Structure formats: structure tokens, C-alpha cells
Length: 95
Length: 416
Image 1 (spheres, rainbow over the protein chains, first blue to last red):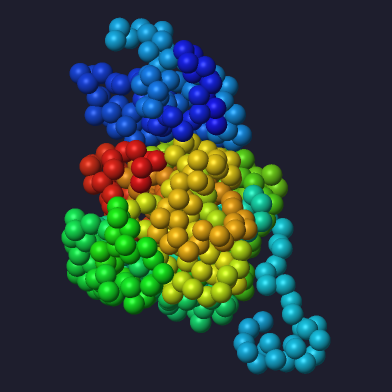
Image 2 (image 1 turned 60 degrees about the vertical axis):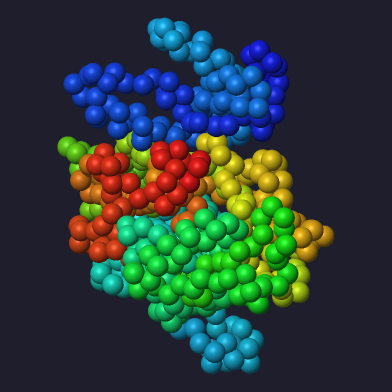
């Protein structure tokens, strides 16, 4: 698989390590009343879709950036790649 | 029809006209007491034990394609019970004991061959870990042997003992481990279940669950609604998408695992050998092909094929372990979809929806578990309580911190 890195252009997926579903960006508030339930769901449960999946890849052997890659899990076709930083900031995260 | 040597002889002399199909092709009835979704090894074993052990007469197995077309026909056929943790070891040993009597039990030649499973170690620390595992196995009543370098050399003189980086320091041997003809397991269970009245319904995909007031009343399928007292889901790699139809999210990711077979070679491997420095496991089929595999590809996938970097990695592991296979050519390679759970161990449990039961999260160790998984799931479906060897395989173990994490990797499915 070739991942279209937003800064570096097309890169072989072998340069990356895989973390999982991009929802892992959305860490729950630890002070919420139901934080324990939220963290259980956050850490252990997955949508695991057959089809389009947004997921986190780390460019370990490259610029060490985290990417959110949109990929089809049935065909392995990669639809887009964004910097995870940009995705998180768009959701209102400051860092 | 009962299969026997006499029957084979009789048919040979009478032109093979007396063989009948091994199972029926029934139309679905409007209602069953128990519907099992998934006509793979685990689903068929569940139906078989429901009928045989728990005397359930109204059981159906629904399969979206043909039976045995998924992981039970795609694995590397290894059986073993060399686990470390208490939550696992009694269950896998129960499975091993069922394997030992399986062919007589379901009257089908599954070619169960206890040729031994040898895990190699390459460092002192690894040998210590194997000694601990061997002792844990013995505490659970399972035989295990720790071999030194000479012991390994006697069994498999062709290995790369003098590797400067990964010399072979010894191995953990389970002599009762081995291989089984995987397709025959599905066929044997299917035939055994069918003979006891189970309806095996192929080309019948489940498209939804009918859930009323928190109770599952049956399943919507491509062949119409089928009512059910209880529904058991045993669909391995498809667990996520099937349970999503019931509105459930699972502690499971689907990943692709590749397997390989070489051209036929003369008999050389004494049993199953696993490499301790890379991820590589190999056995030799009765046709002579080397059957081997390694790591999962490592990303979510529902494609039953993988990518080339892992092929290279697996073959490098093989070359590093036994340089003699360097000129053997690959005949076939394929992929299967693994239901990788968050701690590397399976789930056999009821769900929050009454009448809906789940069996999955087998990671890439589901084949060896087939008989026990079927028995334990049948026990749960029939009695409502978990089988004594499967009490730890619950959904709530993640919430309670009771993970069964053999490799200690944490909630990272692609590392199990």
C-alpha cells in the first residue's frame, strides 16, 4: 500500500506503524461523571467497519508524524491521508 | 450412512454407486429453537454438540456462502494446548482431548496427527519463559517437555543451529500437539450435525436481527425471516459487521493473516516447528507441501488477501530458521480474516440482548479451539451457563480488568 503523505508525497506503508481507529484521537474527559464507562468504550470497543475506515498511522521511519488515513478495509484502497494534528485541531483540540 | 473400512471396500467392488451426499440441503423452516450464525468450524461444532451432547433437535446453522469456506479452510491446521494462563490452558486442553477422540466421535476421517509441536528458544531469557510455561502446563495436567540444543538437534538436525544472531538454545515440546486436516473438520461436524437433525442452510446471509423489547426473536436473512428461541453468532472475522446489525460494538478488530504452502517435497519435517526469534511456524502436509505462516499484516482488513511486505518477512523468518528451504517454491498463498480481540483471547458469552449469544475474538488461534469452542458455546446456548473451562471468556473482563493477555501486549490487537 502507498500512503499519500500530505507533506512528503507517496510513501510505502512499510515506513509506517499502525495504531488503529482514528477515534483514538478523541480521548474522553477523565473528570466526567461516567469517565470509567467512557474510557472502557474508548480503549476497548471498535466500530471495525467493512468498508471505509479512518485510522491512525505513524510515520516511524520518516518524519515521525501521525496521519489519519482514510482507507477501504475491503479493497485496501487508500482514499486520503491528513496530518492527525490538523484533524485534532479541527475538532477543537489545542494541542 | 456410517463410514468404515468395510464400506470403502464394498463400494470399491460395486462401482461406488452407494455413496450419498454427506449432508442435506434443507429449506429454512420458519422457526428453530436455536439458530447458529456461521457455518465454519466453530458454528458447525456448536450445532453438532447441541444435537449430540445437549439433545437439541430444533437447530439450524446459517451460512452466507458455503460451509467451511472461511477460516476453517484457510488456517495452517495446527492443534496444541501449550498456553500459560489459567483462563486459557484448561480450555485448550479440553479442546485437545476432544481432538484426540474426534474421528471416532463423529465418524469422519479428519486425519488428526499428533506429530508434536516444538517451540524453539534462542536466548536464556526465552528458555526461562518456556520453562515457566512448561510448568504452568503441567500444573494444569498437560504434558510438556523442555529440550536442550541436543534434544532439538535429534528431532530436527536441519535447523540453523549455528546462527550467530539467533542460535537455537532448546525448545518447548508438546508431543500431543500436531496437525489436523482442516476441511475435514468442517465436513465431519457438518455431517454429524446433519445426521442428528440439524438443518445446515447455505447461501443464507443474515441481514439483520429482529429485536423486540431487548429480546432477540430471530434473524432476517436473504432467504426470509427465521424465528429463533436463541441465536448464537460464531462468525470469526465477520464478528464486527454481524454484531453491528444488533447495534453492538465489540472489543475486536478484523485483521488479515496470510498463510503459504510450498510445492510438494519429500518428508523432512517431523512435526510443527515454530521459530522463537521471528514469527514463523511450519509443518509439512501429507502431500509434502510445507505449510507455514507468520504475523498478521497489522492493519484492519476484510480483504481475504494480504500485502507483499509480510510475505517477505515470513519468508525471511523461514530462511533464517531453515536455510534448506531456500530453493523451494511457493505454490499458493492466501489470507483469512482474524477476529483480533483486545487481549488476544476469545469471548464466549451472552450479550446484553436476551437470546443473543456471541462466540468470537479467536485471533489467529481459532482452529485448534474448534471442538472446545463448539462444546462450550453449545453448553452456553443450551444451559445458559458457561462451560467450566470457558468461564473467563466474558465480555465484561475488559471492564473489570480481568484480561487474559498471553503476550502482555495490552489493548493493541495487531500485536497479539
